[in-house]
Length: 171
Image 1 (cartoon, helix red, strand yellow):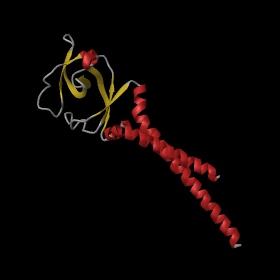
Image 2 (cartoon, helix red, strand yellow; image 1 turned 120 degrees about the vertical axis):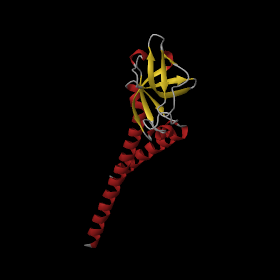
Image 3 (tube, helix red, strand yellow; image 1 turned 120 degrees about the horizontal axis):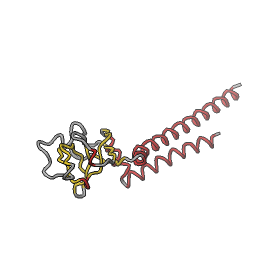
Image 4 (cartoon, one colour; image 1 turned 45 degrees about the vertical axis):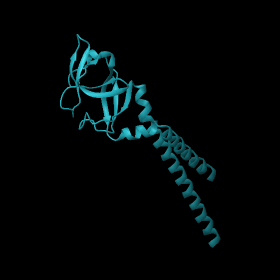
């Protein structure tokens, strides 16, 4: 009688381990997919993604945010919209104060800055309008796009797949 109970207990334990391996592996894979999708999918819908590293737009857009920028014709940008533009090798995110359509440039200002930016922003420098921004996600963005971060993502995905393989072998 105790031998039969021991086999049932062992079978239940094995089923539980198999369930936990499959559940954990699936959750890891879903987390990796979600993290990668948040960085790659928006590009297919016409958005550029940028990490906010300065406080010039605080409190509206805090440092460490991730900003999704949609490319739009510069002539359509209105006063008060937040725009992204190139300034040398950097990308700046500031508010459009005035769109000088005839001259082809913008006056801009960071919300946290005292005055307008000294330099005008020519239409050819414009990337687009900030449509969404999410605080803190910029830190994850930096991790996933670094060399070490990419290695971590691959390792996590491999662990999730291995846990699912182990669960299959336990059947």
